[in-house]
Image (cartoon, rainbow, N blue to C red; front, side, top):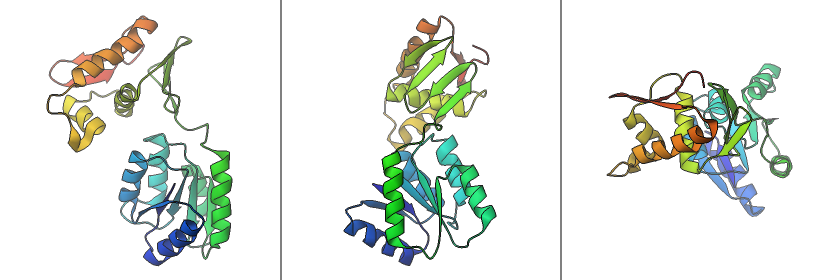
Length: 223
């Protein structure tokens, strides 16, 4: 499955039609915000980003995919001009390849296959915060050479706390980030926070998450 973020509808249609004839499924987004939402919800083999997309610039989109969503999926940039500085900026933002238009759909297909076979990048999705090492792809947390594997929901809660570290995250914000508009009527957040605490604090033998009465939760600054 490919995510194509392309503001030129004619180009998107041509690329999509060619790939579909080669049995490659394609999701389409026509601006950066829509592309970010799809990338956050679905798993793709390759993400393709036009360098000139509106609403959320391609470089910022790529940076957010790598550093906020911690997605390690290979990313191809499509450039309107053969400018070295554009290529350098794309690679620094987290791209894996850069193709200048007009492009050959056959070449694009070959590059997609090559990146798909190479698989996800191994340098994405790792972070050290408050003396704990987090691997979002493996869903593991390591502290003092002790490693704990978390469930998906536990890792999602931890990811939100890390993104806002060292600030306090309100219960409402956590619920919105984790469940969106589908937040459960009777919020189970307190139960999940308790389970996350037990999963981390029992093996690490020290507190990791602090509750600020009337405000929310945050990671303890030094663990």
